[in-house]
Image (cartoon, rainbow, N blue to C red; front, side):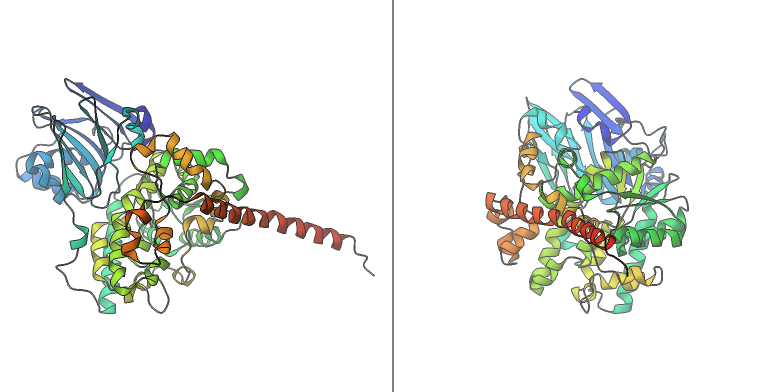
Amino acid sequence: MMDAISTRGTVTETLDRPGMLAGTRRLPIVDRAHAVQPWIFGSGRSVLCYNGEIYNYRQVRAELTELGHVFRSDSDTEVVAEAFDEWGADAVHRLRGEYAFAVVEMSSGRTYLARDSLGVKPLYFTRAKEQWFIGSEVKALTATGVPVCEVSAGHHGWLTPDGRSRLSSHFDLAQLGQNAPLITDVDDAIAAVRAAITDAISVRIDTDLTIGVIVSGGLDSSIVLRHVAERHPDCVAFTIGTPHSEDLTYARKLAAELGVRHEVIEINPRSLNYRQIRDAVEASELTEYGDIINATISMPLFQRIHDCGIKVAIGGDGSDELFGGYPMYAKVSPEQQHQLFLHKIANLGRTELQRVDRTSMRYGVEMRVPFLDPAVVELAMRIPGTLKVRDGVEKWVVRQAFSVDLPDYVITRPKHGLSYSTGLHDRARLFKPLFPRLYRSFGYDIHAPLRRDFDTALSGAAHDLNRALEPEHLLRDYTTIEHATDFVGALRWNAQLPLARMLAGLHIQRCGFRRIE
């Protein structure tokens, strides 16, 4: 199990006790010398294995100190342990951060599991041979040969020695913001968005380590880079794209204006091959095709971040889901927009956030996502769609909130999807028919089936969200005919560029032999 997730950290730490084997691959970030895991606490009664970061750990630590707790480190790991010792399962309501953890009660043999509100950090478990197996990734559990369960985002609960699992929600996304009024005043909405996003970025860069910023040249990542550069002048910007992609042009210009070191990963689409696709499927464990393609693009990005010696990265993921950055929001009725919004956010833990976690931790990089801070999500719930998409401009309120910080060429730039803007999406499409076999070869179907992309399911249901969420639409894979059609389209696209270059070469040759009178 430890070997399967060896890339998630740089330090192997284990504990062997009667009836329990525990271990972590720790990526030392907070109090790097002393936050040794598995963490034993409660006078030896309990053991903690923890992944993630608690951003308000100093405040929680101060509260626990007043209650009489004595600390032997300055780590957020110990704060999680002592918070659980003091408040039990209610401790999660006091933690602001991105986390997944397990606590074993040595006397009872019970195990408590908890995962953060939106599922930034993963957690899985299964039962085999009358024992519980728990891990951060599916690949750590496939050898058991039995179905693997996921701790859903915002859930927690207990596993008992007799084989029962009792998990429930500690975070109700549907109720978020329900007790506060809608923010319909434009100026109030702009001010609130600016304050919430700025604060979410600030708490995630409170570290003495150099921070990597993933920059696409678009709105969201540019907001992050602008604020990180103020606090961490030694930050490094990273951008991936084809040699002539717009992403590189915009990102280079902004990084130069801010005086930020900029690492550019240029990829020729024709260099993307089967091995890279296979590595992305194996690393990501993703269940939708589009996410796998995006993972393929993310892998070399995080590899470069790792090669630069950077362990903490930050980006603009999640803003599109919150603030109307996807065309699908405009294709459903106003009544269904909120339901679609909830569905997208609730599923981030197995889609976008899973891609971010697996591809970053594959190279020992902890990725932070300020736009998905629960406070920002709650605020987005209170802002009507008319302020998110206005006069055909997506994420309008975000653009207004940061218009004073960024140049016009960023503020007015339309949204471009990750893999589409790099020009690599259609190259990766060539390999889509191979995804199911690769996915099964790693044993990931022991957890969940590979399914068609949600936007395809929604389109196939005539943008009727209720129909799209029915199992026959939601869990269905692409048919052989659909794969063939998509493959032909990908072939056509991949043939266009070499053909265009060939024709350009012929034109040059003709011009070269023209007699000049």
